[in-house]
Length: 290
Image 1 (cartoon, rainbow, N blue to C red):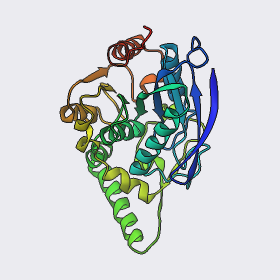
Image 2 (cartoon, rainbow, N blue to C red):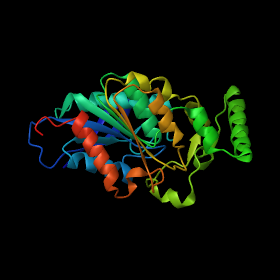
Image 3 (tube, rainbow, N blue to C red):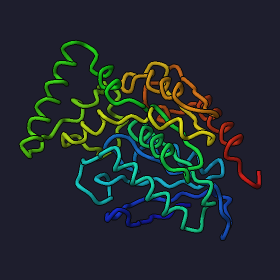
């Protein structure tokens, strides 16, 4: 129950897959969610596929797609600029709303990690997004980087990289930066990355993340619902980032922290996590025939 799709937005062709509930009948419209993948990942991420399967099993339509420069979508490979991905989310929303498969006024957005920060920012700046779910997201780029590179030696390396990138940018040059120099991930967690994930990015990506502050707009999501999910001890994206988002958000906003899992929340079977999402959806984005 899925359909491969393409659309054009902001002068680029995007690739995605719409997934449908098994009990959906021809001509029926359902509430839906966009599923935003993580940093330099793609729609083929195992975690994103787990999320869309969960959503369709609960009766929702789901669209997972490749951001520009990722997967099968057009754009300079690896150029994953935060505000450009916010634009891409808006383009995907417009496309999905016009397919005839969904209730256009009831399209929410789910995002993981980098995609979660984009999802929150998109929901805060686009009133057409009906609801938002953030998994392992962040709201303040500089604070996130300082915690991710916490030791004096690590922060010195990161700061030196930033200085060199800015120096080259002033000369009209671009510098490529290895993925794990930007966002450190412990080796034992790297198997959760999608096949083909981008491992090197232009310095402009680092600058865009450093200055990206979803905290500034998360309060505008209210009175639309927001669900913040985060591991209670996240070694990739600091847990305090979701707590800060909660403190800046309006209501209704729910924050749930989960033990015994690290960053890739949906990569393993977690009945507690799934029950939280299921109950939240039933309350705030109910199926009309439920």
